[in-house]
Image (cartoon, rainbow, N blue to C red):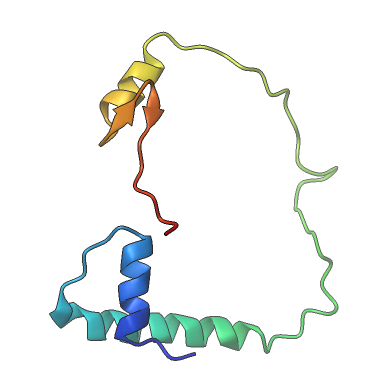
Length: 96
């Protein structure tokens, strides 16, 4: 897969990042290297490996999922949000 400036622009828009024009070529090259590495992983024979594996005897220990309320937690979180309304995060629309 080839990464070009159009792909970098699209990824920048989807991730709400601003990428300077002089850095786009370097980012495209880095993304291309990452994709090449991941494509190399497809060549590894994993047919003999179980779909799931854990080193914990008996599997992963589970706990009850209990809701708890910490006073002031939601206010502290919302205070750090770039934009919020009626105790919800406001994010830009990404679907046109």
